[in-house]
Image (tube, rainbow, N blue to C red; front, side, top):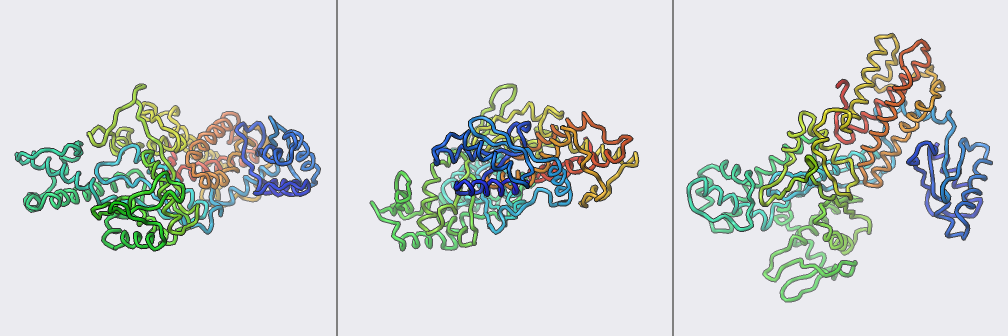
Length: 558
């Protein structure tokens, strides 16, 4: 029906010699009482043609309703919005089509043909994953699942920064803690890592390795202790993410870029393209050519490559692997890196929209109304593992849902008190309860001899079920929300906004509870009962699909 409305709008605008420049956007209005779809196309075009938006909207509406096959009512709202309410026959047809999708509910071809790589978390391997890393994990993994549902080919990647000064500093911290445990006096580095995990790593090193590494030159010694620590921390990070329901197609190590010669090859290509110059012994990239505020150092005056050059080599490697779009998910402290990395992509000849950067804002853990203080270097942090354990047996599900409840560009206050509650006041339990309640309704209907066996699996709706019996406002409202699901998934992927899933789940659960509060499924009118049971099955499938996109379980009982 949406495609039908868009086609009708396109035809009317063509009759009026108006060119919108792109397909007219139709979305469900915030207030569903206004209709099923809304558009602001009259406001967009009014400026171009020099007409009042309401006059233009009125003419568009009149031409639409004059079309014999239009199949919807049109109302005007505000300064020139057009709201559409489709005929009930279309609503029922949408429900039947949704049930025909079986286990493909929510899937579309919206991103077909795209080969997308999403890199997220990429935390330095110098400590356990913290809550900001966890928010990026929930965001990136859900975005990947959204793209997959929209038929894109998706790879996910964790970039391990296992080369450079921070690994040596970690090694020096571990070496000092081991000396402390062995009763040897050794100063702790001024900027070292203070957490208890450093002492735990130090205690795990075999004595023979400690003696061997201490005999090395200072830098090599730090590196040896650091390499051991990195491997231990990466193993722990993998385990935490596995428990969190997040898996990567590949863990890519920065050290690979140096040993393979990719860093030097990237420098050579940039020089060949004329984007590198020398100043005071250092080599600079002309990033101001593409809008950066200053040129960036690629190689320091003493000859060592910068992290920036390694990042350039990493993105060159991504392009060579054939990705048509690359999405990097970074923390807010990396905002200043965006311009320089996009400049590198342009300098290497990649399309302007090839590299996309999404910034994940900070997380503040709030308990009894007060924020908890966190610092990785000082050892005051709440790890992902701690958080999952703190939230009980459903900890991974609760944490994921809470991390996804706000748009990624907004700061997140994570309410620990609310997250601990195992009641319908906790939004994830509210949604899970709706799914569990439907499973209970289906079981009770089966006991009463009312069953749609095909819908209990992935089958389609039997043709003799009369969906026209669903005519009450609560029934039609729920059907309309369900019918929007596949489009919502595609919109969420296109907008890079997984938080739309949590909003949708809560609205759908609320609509289902409203329906169930007013209408009995098992009743004397068997045909009406079958239609309502079909609606229950459709809601169950959609909620299960939406929760699965977030890697959250959909329980059959609670």
